[in-house]
Structure formats: structure tokens, C-alpha cells
Image (cartoon, rainbow, N blue to C red; front, side):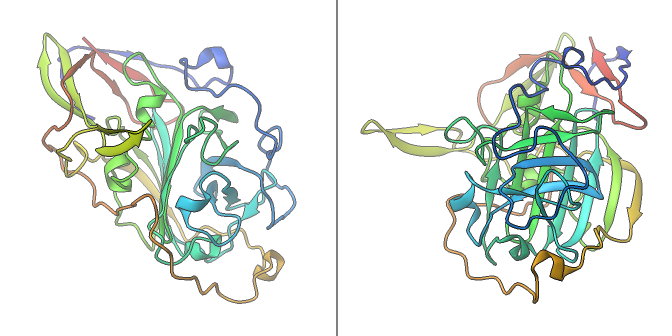
Length: 347
């Protein structure tokens, strides 16, 4: 990731599991929810009618995503979607072997991120559905899906993380779980969830040319979605922030929010390194055990409420767009190479 000041102090932190050891806003509070087990657990019974809504995102062989419990557009099912996992875990449904055709699992010092291609009609998403965005907030403030939670052991132990976002349609998904923060880049900013029409390539920029490949990589950290550096003043970087354009009616009055000019891409695409490939992602469970006797045929989707676009990712220097500049001290996350990476503070 780019730096904007000459001096740096490297703060090295070890992986820790106590709430007090994480920056405020990183760890979720409260219970796992009434549909979920009290804690993540590997090796639970196979239940393809489960309504559990607990995801775990641990590795390329062990992760989960949300999808409908029955054939339905994402826009119509976002409040009650259920967990589907690559392995039997969390009392959730199991993703059938052959569903995923390519996965990229990225580890950074700020978040863990998973991109995937596949035939998600096997997860009850109708063929052609352009999908939508899921996050722990939602229209009712209790998450989409309601009661959905996400854990990861990427920092050394299972933790329930407060901020995450998942974009999914009938043949692609991208998922980010924000696992660290500091005074400049909060977990909420790194997992900013209000750019649902911009698509994976804008919100989670990276290499999307991996279909047919299953890889795990370390990666640099992107700027928070919609952030663009505009200038550096006395060692402090100014950012503009993009807000998605939207019009609506409330209490009989029309209103407009967001920016009329939409940027074409994220400011830059983070690089990845130390990539290792595996042949496939498989649990080895016979399809008949999952109640599958033939390939899903899919169905024609109605027009979804949320538009999901497949972007190609950003270039190294895209123009800023959005609201008036705000002043933030520059903080650059150092990519995770071994264990838990440090944070470089530039003055």
C-alpha cells in the first residue's frame, strides 16, 4: 500500500483473543443469535434444512457464505438467508462439491477476504439473479440476514467480528471480514456496506481473473470503500469519500443523497503475494447424502432490487470523486506475511 510521508514507526502486535486486545468496534458483542450454535464448531451433523446463520471464514478449505434457504432472489431473501459452509460446521448447510469453480482467499492485516465463482443455483439462487449485498446492519438494524454472525480464527483464535460484508449473485461472490482497526481506519470503514450497486471489483478490489483456480495469498490492504486520497498537507493526507446516489420518499417528502458523479473504479488494486494453489475445494460428502440426485436446473430470476455488477477492479491512480475532503492522519496497514502483521504509522 502507498505511503504519503517519509518517516514511519512500526508497531508490531501479536495475535490475541481477548476483547480488550482489539481496537473498539472490531469484536461483536452480544450472543450468537437464536438460530445459531453458541460458538463455531467444526464437524457438526449434516443438515440441509438448517436455518443457522453463523459463518466462519478460516481458510480456503473452511469458509461459509449466506444464501437463500429455498429458491429465491437475494433481494427477496436477504433478511432470512442461511449459512452454507464448505465443511460440516456450525449446524449449517454444506456447500455441495462441484458448486465452486474458483476461489481466492486473501489474508491482510486489516481483513480476511474471499472471492468465489461457481454455480450458486445449487445454493438456491436463481439463474440470472444479479444478487445483492449482506451485512450485519440491514434495514432493521439487526443484520441481513437477521441474526447473522461471522467468525474467523485468522488472528489465532475463533473471534466473532462485528463488521463484515458479502456480495453474492448466481455465479460470483466476494466476502470481507474486518479483523483489525485503528484510529484512522475503523472496522466499520474498512467494511463500509453502503455501496451495494458498485459491485465486488469496486468495493473489494483485487484479482478477479482466478476462475478455475483455488488460491490462498497474502495481500496489501485497500483503502476503505469509496475513499480517495486527494492531497498531503503537513504530512497528513486528505481524502474525498464517495457516497452512492439515491433518491427516495420519506413522510411524503422526496429526498436525494449521495454524489451525482460516480467513480469508475477504486483508487488502486492491492497487490498479492506468497500465493499457494490447491486442486479444488472439496468436503468429499456424497451428493446423495445432501439430498442431491441431479444437477440444479436453476430458474429465470425476476428483476432484483439491488443491482450487482461485475467490475474489473481499479487502476493504480483513479480520480477522486465525492464529497468535500476530510482530514485523516495517514495510517498504512502492512500486509500479513506471518502471524499477525503490524501497523505502520506515518507522521
